[in-house]
Image 1 (tube, rainbow, N blue to C red):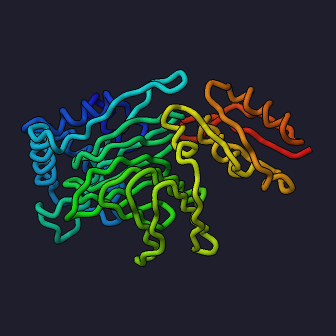
Image 2: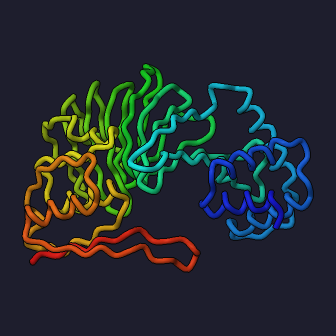
Image 3: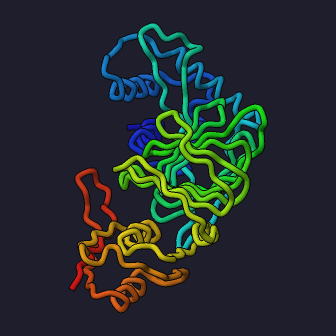
Length: 334
């Protein structure tokens, strides 16, 4: 496997670095890709499509070269990121130019691409979108939008948005759980993780509405929290201290009147660990706690003092794919 193939393989397996991204961009920016690299890319293409094809993909590569070079020349299409540090590691934004779909009758002009911003490993980062909208992306969160940007993004995880005002075109955030946030220009926080089936929105400034299954369900005012129950498909609205929900941008976890069950999930995101909480009689107990510089062990000892629980920490395990699982914490009530 040559260097080109190694960088491309890292991209397709989702375990790439910024150096991998820069090198793949350089490869596609070359006026003529070598035959070996093109054949290697085609093998990856066939892995992601149900129907294998012997058709030439030369026009796909030409389109990639043209689009990448055009992106370099057009500053408004660049994804700008600010790198920050959280705890002991530098935050990262992984930019993927991918998801190229090619059907039997698809013409070159129909080639579609998407851009993905992804945070992993306990990190958070700043982002700026092509329309000037900026914000923060939380730990283990993914933000996606199509190249060309129609002011619609898909979010799985947590993000804070400062949306650029546009009277003619609304800004839409589609959550991993289902509901959509519709806005013209405002500041708000969305927390929606697909694997947890959670969805909550806090409005800091302006006004937004939330759609679910295509219908307007909720209109919010500043200082309001909207929580969605996936089992009943209903929303609960309440007035809150907005800062309690935005502390994560500064590396803080503010838990005020959160249930112990909710707090365990939030602590898991905060420390980038998996928490398994077997606390049937305690899950509805309220927690009031602010975490800033505390280690995981210190936080667990605090919970042990506040509630009749004990815990066990399990080290990461090596997986079949060569990666390691997250550190795991088992919490049980006494």
